[in-house]
Length: 384
Ligand SMILES: Cc1cc2nc3c(=O)[nH]c(=O)nc-3n(C[C@H](O)[C@H](O)[C@H](O)COP(=O)(O)OP(=O)(O)OC[C@H]3O[C@@H](n4cnc5c(N)ncnc54)[C@H](O)[C@@H]3O)c2cc1C
Image (cartoon, rainbow, N blue to C red; front, side, top):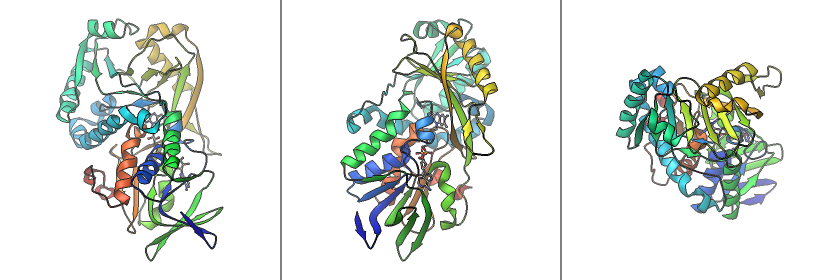
């Protein structure tokens, strides 16, 4: 990175210090690029540091049932993207020299009725076509591996590739490892303008201008601030969501757990707390624009948790929080280049913690014109 006449210059500028941007910076530095990452707040303070830590490797059951099998078939490339990213999670602790509290013991989608089991079987058949295997468990199998689950449950899908990680640790670990490779990371630096002229991007921040030959936009919900560069907004929308954490419990839950009968996910963090969520909507404060926990949804979420795990009745919830998640109309990611040459962007809706490591690598390779490892056609902006 060079500074001349008050303007800093870098080869590749990454905008956004969530998991996507930090992974991109690490990969870019590994490919030998001179990288600068700018983050408006601190690293990992938006969705990447506020999520529930699920590492997803199955098509979400409510979407499968609600949107149908044709949608699910179109979603398979996005599904495969998650699974390929999960493969990266297996070795991230070692590669980033950090304990990210990753465990990939599998995911359990619990069903209460035989109708739900039939839907699960159809879903597993489709997932197998994308190379992801699951076991179908009956009630007795389920009790054997998850004795805390209500005996009224009919069975489950055990998806072998899923798990969990600690979201508070992942993006910062990528950023530290990127800095070790020579990347420059600047926090508290909001990008307020992005222009392109004669092959160079000029970025405006409160602390001065930055010029760059190439730009990776990993700004999550903030992407469309720069939409005039490529002519139209990316169809993303905020999906504020919330999570709760119980007091620490003795080791009890080994899997990422979902429920086919309602919105519920939970897993046990390394510290012993159960993180309970499932995509429940949070509120948005009309004045500050900040997300805040919706108490009714919190109660509804806990009620479902109690149906599935009755022993939670005596357990205290000690913390809740919310964050601005992000959706796309078809639930597939939007990844590619648009506008001036050298500008790439990427968002993975709802499950972007899982997808972040691979999305960062894909964006790094795309912006450097290296051969692509993923067919990005299904994720192109022009599909809308
Ligand atoms: C409550 C909740 C639970 C979730 N649970 C899960 C889960 O269990 N598993 C899972 O896989 N996913 C989950 N998600 C989704 C996941 O958190 C996101 O998909 C993922 O973190 C997106 O990462 P990102 O780096 O693309 O975006 P972000 O984390 O939003 O990062 C973008 C960054 O860009 C910065 N930025 C924006 N504009 C500018 C600017 N102009 N200048 C400088 N910086 C800028 C922002 O400050 C931010 O830090 C959940 C989300 C929420 C909200």
